[in-house]
Length: 401
Picture 1 (cartoon, rainbow, N blue to C red):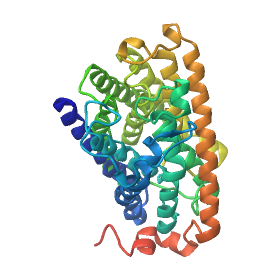
Picture 2: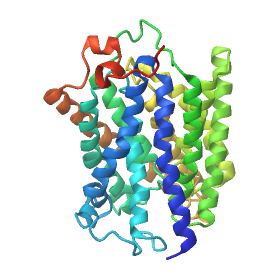
Picture 3: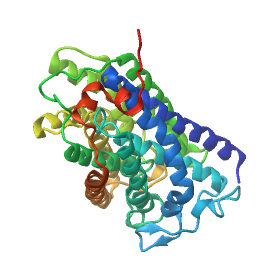
Picture 4: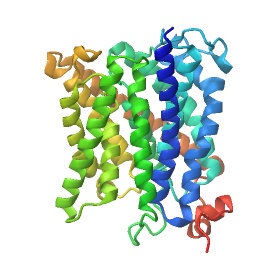
């Protein structure tokens, strides 16, 4: 084992953990004041719940012995055999690899919560998240990173374009379809109650994303350095391009646009971070700002209520990033070549992985939401929604006086 690699991944795991409270602030500022605590609670409580699911069975299903390219075995049930010896990454302890991956598992269902904010029962959210980690996230993680069929096919996903972003966006779309719109949606303004909170959350996400992407090299090496560099460049480019397009579209540049653009760039570079160079990262970021700005307009066209734009940012951004990886990936950065480096077949592989991810994650999430709705109900009633979920679900208020 390597002491430098171990220290680096410990720090990166902590950075990824910090992203989930950052997401809580990002989402919390975007909702109405009567729902800020319930929205923050979705992300923060998942730090606890998903950790318990992960260490008991989730990690084993994701990284246990492959079974038909579909799911991992029960080798690591309750972390059996997961200690300080080298694990899937040869130079760091197995337990460190496990906890680094745990932080990815935590933030993914937290991302989904942006779609059903302001109208879901807390109990139903918890049950859905537990089942989703076991039945959707664990298979996806195994397919891409645990030796499953997407890995065998050669699909490239450096840090979670499919595993984290497209999967959460597909679930978010299913949530919007099953839960329906918030009461009054389309007839009254739903104004973010605290944009400084949202910008702070975006800054924490940008900071934590360096651990998310650079840490996915699983070593303190040149690949990690390039992933760090490309992550920052893409986020910066997307923040600028989003604001410029928004300025042209509506006549005013906004702080929300800058924050949303940065997150869009971070999402888009995630699958490509360790496979492309700085200038392709710049192009990916510029494209993400424009495409994701357009993506959030889709809900107006198709009349669904994705409250905090999970589909528009994480779905569109993750899809663009996965396909862009197939275009600009270069062997010199630690992966394989893509279309522009003489390997057009890689783009086809990326396309297949994108379609499979969206179909599997949407259909499974749709099934889970419908089943939970049938058994225990998903939405709070009209009076509770009018009063706000902070009071009706948690008996708290964020602001007094």
